[in-house]
Length: 196
Image 1 (cartoon, rainbow, N blue to C red):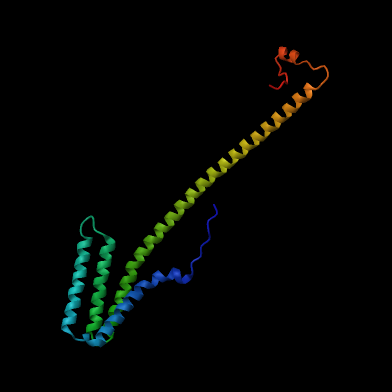
Image 2: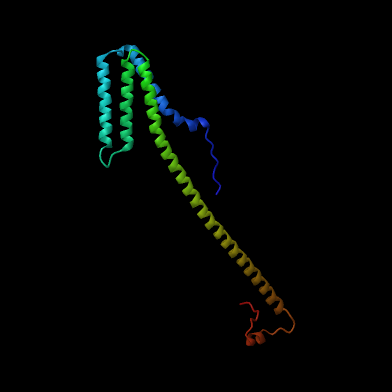
């Protein structure tokens, strides 16, 4: 009934929204650092990144194939493939315009894919909250009914105790009256008031 009140700082709520931009920016930065350290116009480095990107894409394709494909693993493999391709272009290109264009494109694609998952997660979260609220209301109704039943039983027990006490006092008072004959009451079918 009494739920704890939790508060999340706005930065904690927005942190997952920054992950796609941070990931693509990190890849661009690492690619440009690689470029500055001799990867510019290096055919061997470009071939390495091409082979790695194609291998990651092939792994994603194989993971997503068939009915038992794992969507999370396939998405991760395709993201790695795209990241490797972006890092390869950022490392190989001599200017900054092509890497920035690819960074903007990769960031846009990352946000469009992440937005789909965020909507699904939000929808599932709302459905869970609605289901929980409905169950809580059902249980609250049962709790109220049981509380009323318990109060009624307690009240009945109190009344029975009060009645038994009053009856015992009346029988005791009747037993001390002058001229009281318990045998006459027993023959009449009434309680005699004797204690056993």
